[in-house]
Length: 149
Image (cartoon, rainbow, N blue to C red; front, side):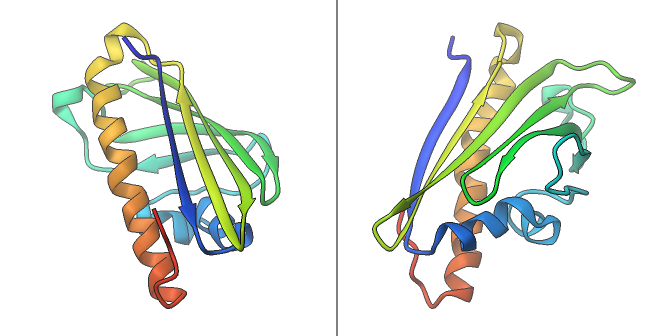
């Protein structure tokens, strides 16, 4: 079984513009989930959605900012489970941005999936694709349609 999700996307927007959608709570909420993210190492935050009973997730993802290199790298933990402090999902999400021509290459790696997480792994693999498309749509709306995937 795969233990990590890896993806990359190419944007015509600058790393600074893409970075905003990874580090500003109100922009993250537009494409991913409501949250209380702050771009501060050590900050603990949550993503919240409705409970996902089919995956035994209570809908609260507990995260902690592990590393920030402005406009280049963001790493945070991502934990979830049925509730009451029980975590059946304990992963690390790493975003990297590189200048790519006039735009940006965005890399995603989410690692740490276990055999028991197979259904969650599949759901998150599809979820990242769909959520990144939402980010692209928002970037396009504010940048006159200049994003490529």
